[in-house]
Image (cartoon, rainbow, N blue to C red):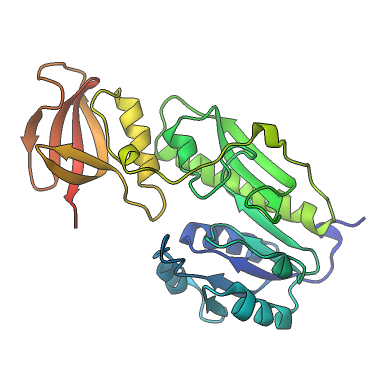
Length: 292
């Protein structure tokens, strides 16, 4: 059984993405390995769960790359991909299931990169691992199966969840995605069947409920910080606060002091762009924006 290092010709690769970060990570791997990116498939998403970031992906795509924008995988994407005769399909952020028909087209099959430590946090909302401070965070490359995020694992990178979850943690997370992509794709073209997931350990990463989007001033500052990061990750802007009967978007926050001077939830100072709030962990400055 040969592996990717023994393949003498460049592979023809089709990508499926809607998030720019997913597109960037997969195309970086393609170019680093000297493969050919023959098609990028993206989508505006279903009406119930639109994916507006696909427009950014189109803007960043090289002019010589063919880009397909569609919501119809069977009737539109499959015939085109079949004509292109790809060696590999890769996916990182796509709101539709890659069908078995599509998976059978490429020479080496179809691989998904799920940015969580499977079988935990299967599903569309991988930000939930940070919101809930899971024991581990990371990324998993796996064969695409009939059910979402259930295919055999080709590569997995994981690290303990730190107590303080900030932008540096997100940078580490992206690094683990890149490493899982590189290792997983090499094993895929080597014909590795992968490791079967333990369904008994599976959990589902459901979308955030309306209640979960609102910050609670009874939470310590590290909780508020990680929840805000998780709610606003990717193309999302979900973090909210209710202040004086008004609902505001929370774009970010910082701890000003650990003082417990005012009643919980008191608005201490306010400007057009920020509000200082008394929380259980101290005085926190929120960067805010009115609801549209």
